[in-house]
Image (cartoon, rainbow, N blue to C red; front, top):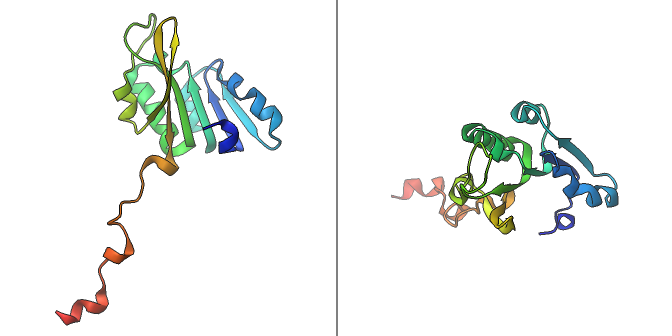
Length: 155
């Protein structure tokens, strides 16, 4: 899905160079607002912001301890983002990283793979979490299967 198809009004970019992804969109979309968190205590900064239509995080997770990174992603997913996109290096071959990520780590957080890129021959994955498509309503959770009190006296 292209960013213009989602038509977000509020965007949050997390990571030193993450804001560059939105430069053209913000310039061409009147009324859109971009908030950029370049560095610092990510969780504290995120908790002081509101809710965004679109959140993108890149170049952050791999430099945090795994537990802190998972907490940050869960906070973004559950409270601050309608749509969350994560660009994360996959595998242990990346040098100078604090934590290492596998697809299953991110899939366990409810994310789905969008694309895989290569940087210096190593996999870099783009994953997303979209609350609208995360879980569809099961068929059984439908009013035709609910209790019907008007029939209780018949049996």
